[in-house]
Length: 104
Image 1 (cartoon, rainbow, N blue to C red):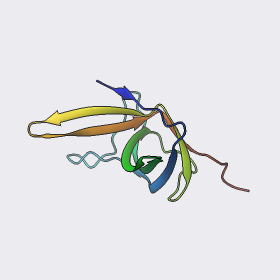
Image 2: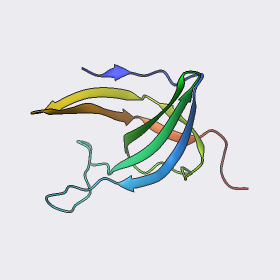
Image 3: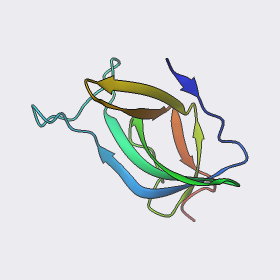
Image 4: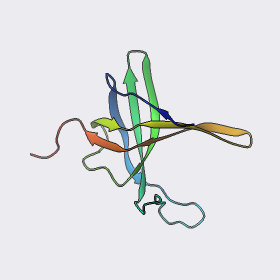
């Protein structure tokens, strides 16, 4: 089951810049079904109720997303998973972009 998350009214801050997601068995970067490279971005999601750190997977390297940048996230989805006695939630996004344009 996938759950769509509403980030409107929240502040999202990049805690760690995008990193290529690598296959531990082959050492090759993971890709989507469409052949796009997968990246992971660590975000801090702040609301009135507190903050959570999310590791979000995204297809393609998001431009202008650096540590400390405020971002907006489109299509954020949570997917619960379990493997044997381990379980958790994985997060994916359709798009991550700075809330203000970068550059001058």
